[in-house]
Image (cartoon, rainbow, N blue to C red; front, side):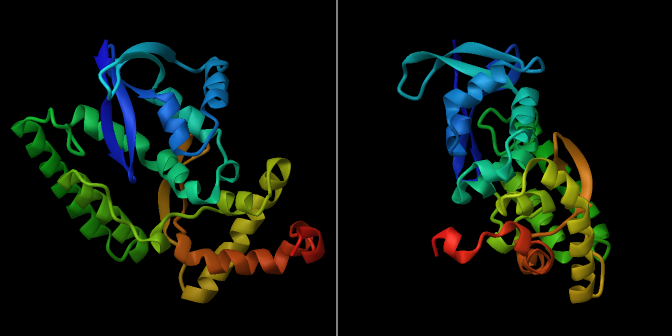
Length: 262
């Protein structure tokens, strides 16, 4: 039997257990937090050849022992990468995006460096966390002027919050927004998403340059199951997304008001 570890994550608790010395995610709680059908998602994960899952005997919060389906971090990330933002309720989309982009770092910090802050952390581990944060802050200071101010502020908030064992407080307008996420919100999926995504991105970049007199910052984000360098747009840029959509795509994708029931 093993105890559940609760890792604070964007106002929720990510439930994890230790299996063979490594963190495993309790799948039901994680999927339910995003507003997904947990049973369906667990079945889908179990059907994948790349998935590593287990039925783990866990001591729950009420002290009772239960069998729970768990998965290693790699499997959980792969499963998250297959879930488009359009599949979840609008209010849950920021949490899904946060899971896709940040959850691996949070789990690693908690489990291996005593971060976030793990009550098992020793004085030496806390010193490591502080030293790591100091080095990151030095790098961020050097990056001032090389990347966008919004991206730099978000990263700084994350570094400070992790060093303090807290969740970063990021204003809504600073939350990341990608071309793929925006198009999925608009109902563009499948082959259409692949065919127009690149052109939409080029038109968006041109609109950004016109509005700001400079190119958008380039950042690394978790996209399609891997880390990629992409334009670092945020929710503050949504009006530019809307501008490009309304000019080039709305006529083909947005239904007439009468059909929409308005």
